[in-house]
Length: 143
Image (cartoon, rainbow, N blue to C red; front, top):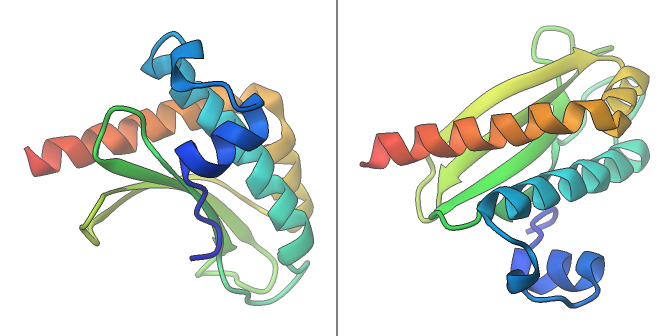
């Protein structure tokens, strides 16, 4: 599937220089790293793949949430109410092997506004918190 980045396979080697999981102190560090890096990847893809106007196929970057059975996705898609001009950014989680999705909408705006939002490092803590929230909600549902 396009847009899925396996933590052990691609992100770890490509963005940590091949260092092992042991170099990150805890799950919080791993989650912050993965979320930040996936925001950057999503921004790069959105710049190339999201048109200024009109409908398009949503783009996403997916990663395994450390020490859970969940996968988190960061998504850019066209707004259902105004697909001509608006794009939405959301964070989702699902349990591996399930199609139940928990989602939080993070931002809505033009392509330029979405790119600015994704590239703004001050928003990374919001993404990290959203990943934790949707993952926890997914865990609670399946417990």
